[in-house]
Amino acid sequence: MAAQKGKDLLLKIDDGAGTFISVAGLRVKQLSFNAQTVDVTHAESSGRWRELLAGAGVRRAGLSGSGVFKDDASDAEVRTLFFADAIRAWQITIPDFGRIEGPFQIASLEYRGEHAGEVTFDIALESAGALSFSAI
Image 1 (cartoon, one colour):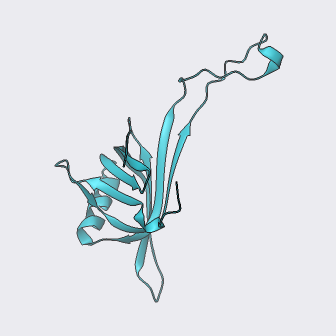
Image 2 (tube, rainbow, N blue to C red):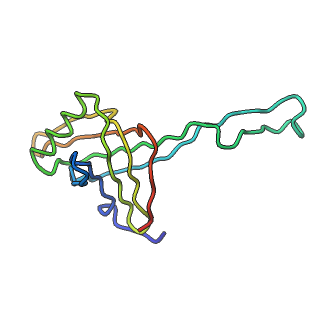
Image 3 (cartoon, rainbow, N blue to C red):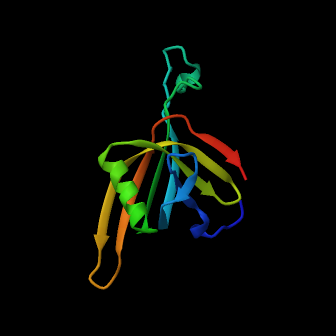
């Protein structure tokens, strides 16, 4: 993948009617994928090398970001989802790579502001089910 503008990584939320809408101007974003492993090493493992069981671990994705909300409605929607412990479909677009879609829950939501600046927020999302990937 060639170098891309960081601002082109987009975060959108399902509006409840199947349409994804942008919720915030994220200035810093990070998407990570992780998979737990299942160790099946035993006394007769070749050379005492660790052996792993393919396809047995738990997979997860997490997204973190910080920035400013697009508008009051976006701020209210995200805040409502957080306090309701709700799971909603989110969409993350990575330019020249693809689009990740699926259920996420807001794991943390933080607000901060400087005396001579705007109010910003930090958000962390954790996957809450199967995710899909589509190339763009």
